[in-house]
Length: 247
Ligand SMILES: NC(=O)c1ccc[n+]([C@@H]2O[C@H](COP(=O)([O-])OP(=O)(O)OC[C@H]3O[C@@H](n4cnc5c(N)ncnc54)[C@H](O)[C@@H]3O)[C@@H](O)[C@H]2O)c1
Image 1 (cartoon, rainbow, N blue to C red):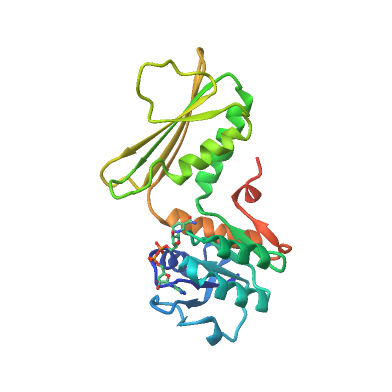
Image 2: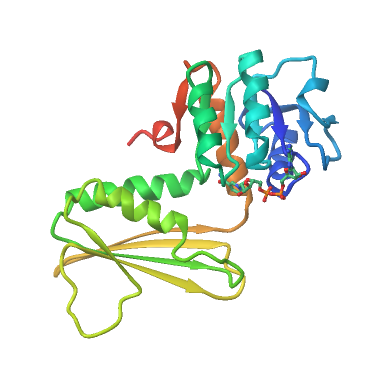
């Protein structure tokens, strides 16, 4: 599987390139596209116009403002895209929807396979134990600005799809007892923690704890290559992590 890495000079682009040098998921780097950076060990160009050969897939870890140019090239060459960049405007998301009528696009704000699994397992557990109480605890480094994390919210929202009456309580305090419908969400910030998410599901008789710990950013690169392998040869449309996970 020949890949183009859009944003190869960045932290994530370089992680993908490093894995592809080892042939992870059958990948090899055809080229990197990055107007402001490069990667030693792969051919790098400043724009898609400079590419003559075709790739099997484009993996994008660049900047959301570059999305429309990327999609123009992908539609013109009928190349599937793994869109891992975040922060898109409504206008850019509309361009993604339009392009997905012509090519396969895998779009996920969190490319971690492990997190995707955690979300599915949390959903199954919440559905299987409808009376159980649920708390979500997430831990991140002290530089993180947003709390709770987007992933904690994604877990909570996934649980809500199987529990109509669920509502979220952020960082509980005060005198009131919890109710069964409540999903507690708690954010901890300290030190250099890459990212941990824990879902605790409990009844009077038992407790289930589901936990994911990220050790390095490489997990996103591994997930992006798995996504690339998954969408090569797929029909036009938008795909995401749950499509890749069969439980
Ligand atoms: N989906 C996920 O799981 C996931 C995980 C980590 C990061 N991200 C997202 O991926 C993106 C990149 O993250 P990063 O940490 O590698 O950032 P980074 O700043 O280290 O790298 C971005 C790279 O994109 C390049 N770039 C900037 N503008 C460009 C353009 N117009 N065309 C092509 N390349 C351009 C830069 O030169 C740089 O090399 C961000 O949007 C980030 O939020 C997503």
